[in-house]
Amino acid sequence: MNKDPLTPEEVQAASDRFFPLFDIILKNMPEGSKTEDCLSVMASVCELAHKMREEEEEKSKALPFGFNKKKDDDSSSTEE
Image (cartoon, rainbow, N blue to C red):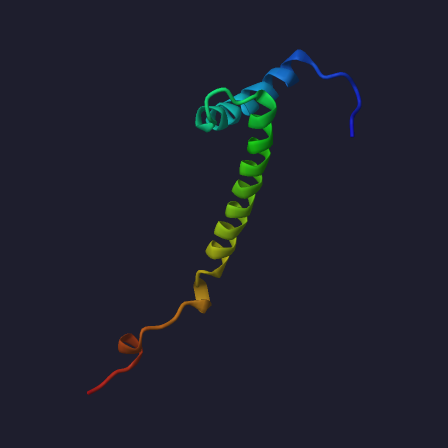
C-alpha cells in the first residue's frame, strides 16, 4: 500500500464518491442525529448493500444459459 500523502485530487475524488452515499443515509436519520450515529448506520447499510449485491450476483449465476437451458417438452417431441 502506498503511504505517500494524498493529493487534493485524490481526496476530492474520494469525497465525490463518499458524500452522496452519506447524504442518502443522513436524510433518513431521525432529526438531531449526530454525525457519529450516521456513520455507524452508514457502515451497517453498506454491509447490507454488499450482502444484497452478492445475493443478486448468485441469483444471476444460477440462471440457465447455453447448454444448461431447459428444453421445452413441446419443442423436443414430434408427433405425426
